[in-house]
Amino acid sequence: MDVATLYEAARSAGLLTAVTVAGTTVHCAFRAPDETVLDGFALSRDYQIDYPASWLTLAAGDTVEVAGNTYQVRDVRAIGDGSERRASLSQL
Image (tube, rainbow, N blue to C red; front, side, top):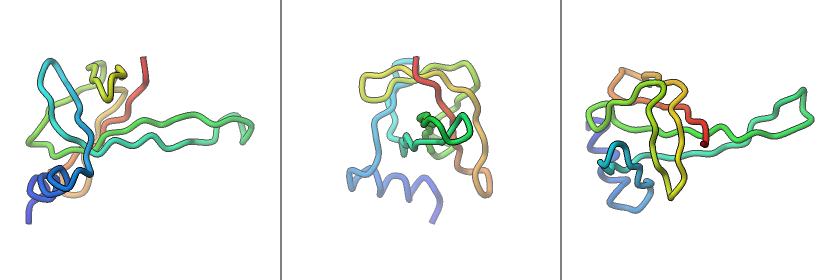
């Protein structure tokens, strides 16, 4: 099974979040985990989306919209065999 098929199944099950990029909406795995910063004295959100590389092309500096909030792409990395990507985001 390829990664796009897995993501399509997750989308059908309601497990993914709609992400809009330049007027096009795709469904991605959106995460906003807390990260400890300032030597443990504060928490910061580390926004990320995971998606099949065949569904979306993102680069640093692009903007995306998730649930009415706008984010700027900081970094995009390949996951596993390269058929999946993870974009790190900063909320604007």
